Image 1: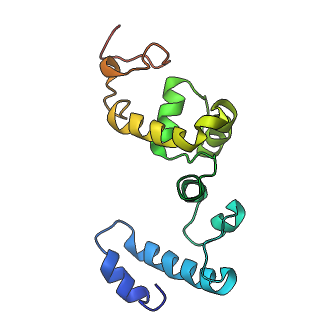
Image 2 (image 1 turned 45 degrees about the horizontal axis):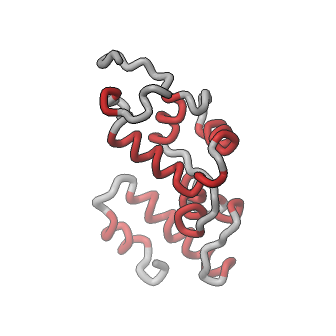
Length: 149
């Protein structure tokens, strides 16, 4: 990435949203990885979130999916679904993450994020949840306006 440079990187990723700031973060992250971490991605959460452009969600996704660490990344789907169905009752992403870590059994942490994301994308959608096809509707606290059971 460093050899490519920020302007060339921008050209190559210009089709994605926020490409200017992403290119800047990628170059900054790459410099730090080379200089501080011997060109290796750190495996410590605090080290990961100290890198440009890496937040809690990205760090947790890397730890979980990349390294098999039993943790949970909270994105918009996970936040919405876990609060909507009643797994947690939180107002922000960090508190949702902490509460989910307390209620999701450790043996499911490698997969819970993926299950919640997929459920949020395909069944418990933001605008029009498909309550009538939901396999957990009997456990869910959401009162679906479109479908009465």
